[in-house]
Image (cartoon, rainbow, N blue to C red; front, top):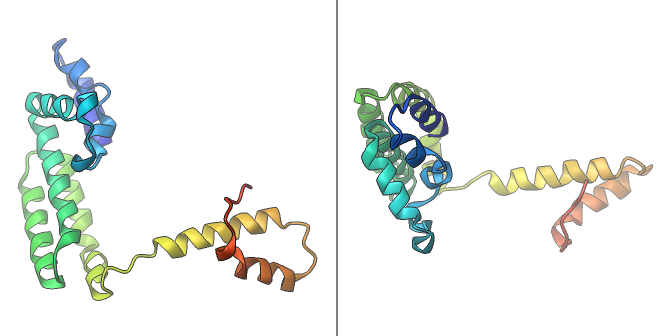
Amino acid sequence: MTKLRHDLQREAENGLGKPVLKGIRWLLLKNPDNLDDKRNERQRLDEALKLNEPLATAYYMKEELRNIWHQPDKLSAQNALDEWVKKAAASDVNMLKQFSKTIAAHRSGILAYFDFNGLSTGPLEGTNNKIKTLHKMAYGFRDVEFFKLKIMALHETNYVLVG
C-alpha cells in the first residue's frame, strides 16, 4: 500500500490530487474500525479513495484479504483466498498482480493457520527477542546455569528489558 500510494502521489499531475494523497499512509494501513472521526480520518481516506481508482482497488483488496483470517474453517478460508488471488490477478494494479503471485506461492503456509486453530508464533517470537536482549545484557555472566535461571524467570518480570 505504501509503495503504491507513493508512486501514485509522484504521478499526480494536478494540484488537487497531490495534497489529498499526502499524509494518508497510516489511514490506508489502519484498521477501518479504528479510524478517528474526530480527526476526520474516515473523510480524508474516502476523499483519497474517490480520487484514485488504483488506490481504492488496492485498499479494498487489502481489507478483503484481512477477512480471510476471520473465516470459520480451512475450507472457507481456502475458497476465500483462492477467490482473492483471482481478483488480484485480474485487477489493473500491477502491484496487486505481483502480490497475488506471492500469496499463491505461500498459500499452504497461510492456510496452515487454520490447521492449528489460529495459533500464532507471535508470543514465541516475543519471548525469543526478550532472550536475545537478556543475552546482550548478560555479557558479564560467567555461569550458564544462572543465565538459564534468568531465562526461566523472564515471564515473571513486570518491567521491559532495555538493552
